[in-house]
Image: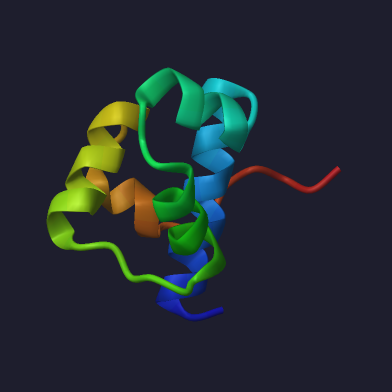
Amino acid sequence: MDAEAVFRQRLRQLIEEKYGSVDRFWLDTGWSKGHVSHILRGTRSPSLATIVKLAKILEVEVIELFQPSRRTKE
C-alpha cells in the first residue's frame, strides 16, 4: 500500500474512532464535507497545513496519520 493510501485509510480510521462517523466529524468540526471527502477519496491532496490541523483535531501526532493501523483484524 502506498503512503497516500495509508494516509487516507488511517485518517478515516481516526475520524471514525474519535467521532463515530465522517458525517459527525464534519458536523462537529465545521470542516467542509466536500474538502474532507475529496481527501478521503484521494481526489485532492491536503497541504501540510491541513495535515497538521487534522492531526491536532484528532489529537494525534502528524506521523500517526502516515502509519498503518496497529489494530488486529478480527
